Amino acid sequence: MFFFMNVNHRKEERICSNKGFTLIELLVVMAILGLLVGLIGINVFKHLGESKQKTAAIQISMLGDALDAFNLSVGRYPTTDEGLEALYKDPGIKGWDGPYLRKDVPLDPWGRPYVYRCPPEHGEYYDLESYGADGQEGGTGENADITSWK
Image (cartoon, rainbow, N blue to C red; front, side, top):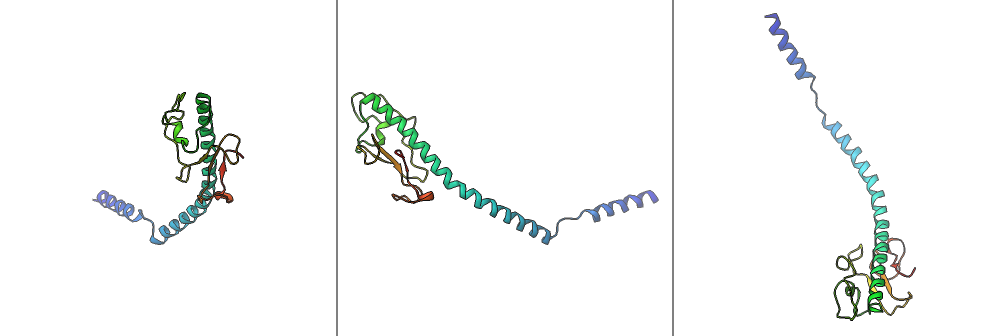
């Protein structure tokens, strides 16, 4: 009988010693996590704009390579009216040996089409640009234009 009483006593000790977190402890942990997410989130969003500008510059370079390949095949760059679509879809030009892009012409990182002009206003052979985050010509920081001629 002593043996059985001792076992029950141990069960009660185990049950009593299993404590959970209090509501205040959980609120403190959640507040700390909220502060950490807030601090990290600010830094992440700061670099997000920079990465979009770098992506636009890389895409402009890639489109420039495709434009050069088009020029080698056809003997000229696509006109403004033919646009960048001439790199992916046959516009019916003699010598076209495309597509010069693996996929359709990409949008800029802000979801807008790239601006293409030939004959150019700024560059040597063509103008290719993205107007940045604000979608308007000019600007600074994230709103700065990304161009093929700078």
